[in-house]
Structure formats: structure tokens, C-alpha cells
Amino acid sequence: MKKNSLIILASIIFTIIVSCKQETYFQGRLLYEDYCQNCHMEDGTGLRGIIPPLKGSDFLKNNQNALVCLIRKGSQGGLTINGSKYTQPMPGNANLTQGDIANIINYINHAWDNNYGVILYDDVLKQFETCR
Amino acid sequence: MRFLLLIFALGIFACEYTPAKLPILGERDFVNGDTVYHTVRPFSFIDQDSQQVTEKTFGGKVYVVDFFFTHCPTICPKVTKQMLRLYEKYKDDSRVLLLSHSIDTRNDTVGRLQEYARNLDVSSKSWHFVTGNSDSIYSIAADYFSFAKEDAESPGGFVHSGQLILADKHRRIRAFCDGTDEKDVTRFMKEIDVLLNEKE
Image (cartoon, rainbow over all chains, first blue to last red; front, side):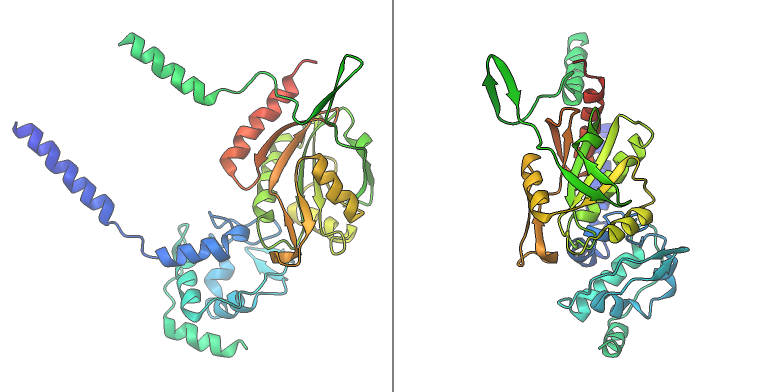
């Protein structure tokens, strides 16, 4: 009897731990799936030579101040990422709000073992002002 | 107990089941007692290395087809990523070829296709990216039971399916998969191997 209740208790604790482990950047992941994943892929690896990776990307790590405009306005291509040059242009996303962009950046900064820090909403607003 | 294990084992094998022979898909006719299968019409396109590519290029080969365009903002990169898996698996196997048709023939010039293939680091020895007359490409899509056409309403200006299509050495359609779904492509790769091992 004692053994049984111990097992039940353990399963309850296990269930609580599993179900309460919240996904921090859930909203950002949903937006990523809708706006970015077709090209940059679910695992953030991009497409060899055509679409740059976000996972382990030195560009992402070192250009945190340029991300808002890049996501909003796109790029004409010609970026060098992890030593490879990518010529394919990236389309802009005119219908993403500042909040959406903040969520996306915070998601890609932390997904796939990336650890590139948090961007604050205020910083997104500041960057957003500069990219018209 | 032993009986249960047997059922369990059967269950596992049932999920992994791949047929020993692939079906021949599409409508068939009967002419003078012979069966005439649906066959892809003869074609002529230009590939990334400015070579003319015709049905003869694929004569005696098993080949996988898709439809894409280089600046496609929707499903193409995912499909191309899966085609790249096939390329890596079969690039040294001369029995298998890949054929990607651009459906944006105005923008996807030979030069652009060449740049695309070079960036992907793939060779036209086993993977042809082709452009040509857009009407011929749209009608050949129908022969592969696929679908491609211009549509101003769609993102990027085109609608098309993300299917990969497997054709045999007689240009008959033998299998399909969803080119955006990694698992489905894994299943499809097994079907390619079945086709390669098929005895006539």
C-alpha cells in the first residue's frame, strides 16, 4: 500500500513538472512558423547556399541592432553569414508590428541552442524609427 | 505471452511495410490486348548549364520531379531542402536523376538557375534545373499529376504543388510524396529503392 501511494505521488509530481514547464517564447515561435519558417526552416538551418541559417549564426549574434529593419524591410542579399555569402534577396514583412518583431527576435535569439540575449520592446521601437 | 509478442512484432512490421513493386499510376488504355499506361509526353527544356534536356536525357533512368521558382517565398525552400536529401543520397548513383522545373520562366533565366545550383553546390550531372516555354512547363506539370500556374493573387505570383513525383525509365508515374514533409520524403526514398530493385 505504501509503495503504491509513493508511485502515485511521484507520478503527480512528474506530471506537474512536465506541464508547468512553460515555453518562454511561444508567441515568437508561432510568428516564426508563419513568417520565417518556410525559408529558414523549423530547425533554423536555412537552405544550403541559398538561405542563411539562424541557428548558430554569427550574423544574428553580431547584428542585433540591425535585425528589426532586416525583418521589416528585407534585404537585397549579399550578406556574409558564417563565412558564406548569400546572394538571394530576403523579402520584407510590412505587416509585422513592432511587438511581433520583438517576439520573433526573442524566439530566434533563444531557439536551437542560440543564446543571443533578449531584445527589449523599447529597443525595437527605437530601431523601427530608423528604418523608414 | 509468446502469442502477444508475435502480434506486437507483426504490428511493427505492418507499419514499416513497403511493397515489392510500385503501382503504375494514372489512367490506362487497352489497345489490341496490350495495356497502355499513362506516360509523360516528350519534352525539351534548357538546364542550368545551358544544355538541352529532353526525355532522352532521362531514358533508362528513374527520376524525381518537382516544380519551383528561385525567388519563391512559400514552400519551395522546404521542398528544395528535401530534394537536396535525395541528391545527397543518389548523386553517385547514375540510375537516378533529379529534375526541377522553374515555373517562373521569365525571371528564372539560365543564368539565374546556374547561380542557384552553384549556391546549392549541386551538379547538373544528377540534378537538372530547367526553364523553357512556360506553357510547356505548365502542361508537363499536368502529365506528372502536379499543378503549376501563374496567379497574381498568390505570394510570389504563382500557385503550384509541393509534391515530389517519381517517374520510371518509361516516363510512367510510380510514386508521390509531400515535398515539404521530411517523414513523407523518407517513405518516398524507400519507394525509390523499391523501383530501382524492380524486375521487369
